[in-house]
Length: 207
Length: 318
Image (tube, rainbow over all chains, first blue to last red; front, side, top):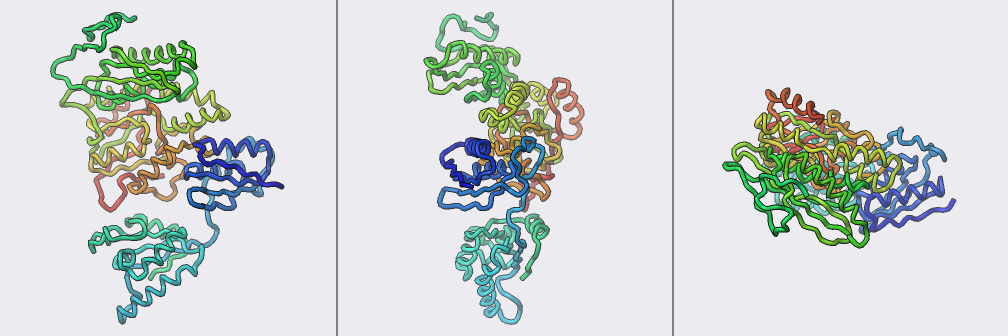
């Protein structure tokens, strides 16, 4: 079956959704590639396709453009006008294990802090090996110092964040060390996010 | 045109450049202005909604609308004059219903129709409500349901069910916030706002910041328009509503188990939305009574709590 390409850049919401709707109605079951240039459209199109029993198999971002590739999911049927009844909003995005890495110190272990610092540097450098399982890194207590200017692993953490790993940095800790303004990576967070993250994670690696 | 109103010292019929208005001694002015492009297809109802929306700002402060001036942009070469007349008629009916008097207006030719009002209200200078009047312990009451931004988007897209969406918009967006205003005056409330472009979440967050408190909203207690929830699930959320959510994100704490769709609707940009009132517990029963008497909602959607620097100012519970 051929793939339809819908170029929706520059179209305000809900136009991109309407383009998808037209496409599905005129050519039910077709594969689609949808190009949009804002996250509102990206989200709306993804939701619409979910209700229409389409699966967004990939979402790639290139510059200002999102490229959504969608195909009918296994439950797709040609006549499902009663689809409004089924609410399929909350599909998990990734199917792997959600791994949370919890770092509460700038060094690993006790004995020698110079060695401990090197070990931490190594540890963070090798974290990308977890692949897409690596979901979130939380930095607490002295661990927040890894996120500031001059940190030996700053570039590693920035690269991870760029690849979609969520990095949360404890705001109370940054304030305590008075380095709030030196944070160079991650989002400032609070204890509720920390606890919730632990609950949501499939696996927690505590350093 | 209309019978001369005691408040006006000039006459609309005499083509004066300005209106001169008699003003009661000891009162303060509430001044506000709002206008926008059509959100429904019927011009008379568009006029009503745009006027109700502009008048709402006066009610939100606990004031009473006093005079109003039309603001009109209209493509007079493209559309028949009757349409403009219908819009103004709708606006006039709302101004009258609000007990205000039309004092004039201004129109320009424009590509796109726009209508609204500049409204002047009166308020007791020692008794009015504002964003900074929330106190820990207040109940948050909402007087209209949420979801008009999504409905207007569905209507614009001519989605199935558009006629129904339009009726819901007439009913709620066309309704004056007079009942909420009366509650503010009678119960001497000090914390209130009207829910418009920033959405319920955005406006509540503004209040929390101004009042130096935190607020909790319970998604399960918010009256969402069912058709809007359905539309939102189909991808009919306007870009502005996403922008609201993004703008507020750093100050919002979303508890697990919150339906992400309802979270989006909390930030849906409302047109002529309801009032959001901060009501001390002892006054809640009477507030509910007044609101219900006037056909407004009195939905207890959340609570005001003490400020905690380590937590989000706006917390969304399931």
